[in-house]
Length: 268
Image 1: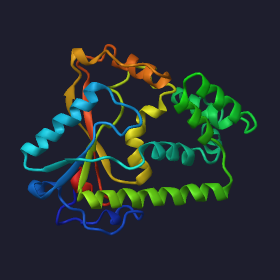
Image 2: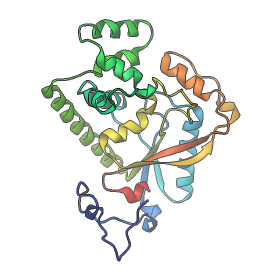
Image 3: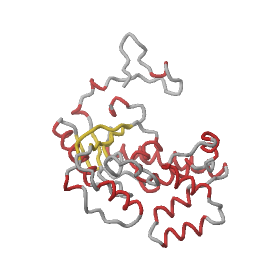
Image 4: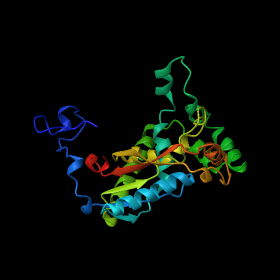
């Protein structure tokens, strides 16, 4: 990470006009015993792989041993935040993406989202209902929100995002939190090709993109051989997670650290 010294400007705003002119603090000067950190191993939307959850637990214990106060925390409206992210991202119906890539093929990870965005509105309820009928409620809801929207609906989404951000800050304030540790993704590293149509697997990181909180990932542990099996498969998301877990022994696993706005020193 870029670190300013006394001889340089202590403000990132000197390099980036979109950053508020706030003093950039040195993370090495943090008093750990003054920190209060929340943690969660699952946000209730998609259950992460066992190794991912264990990584959070081990990080929690390491922080406590270092003198940090660590408390359980339940993030507000995780399901709503995930679909709000996709709804906002697709508001132009994918037109900017099409314009940017021209005739080049799109990344396969965008396949499901492009298909959903291009569905005629008349067919959307039918396709969504079919997905729900065939045991794909998460995909069904995705099909409903990933679409082009009129400007007034986009502004409503922006208002809802701001309201959620205020609600999350209020929850952090009530719990007295300086930062949060949680999974960065629902699985260990994916094999080549497994990220296709697995956008929902990134919901844990998407949350802090939506909220515009500084967040990063640090390595913690590796997958144990006994953590590769046992996933209950309910839909295509669970099927992909089970396939990723299979053969993942000894792959690295990290933990996500999120902090308040303009508190990058805590996240680092």
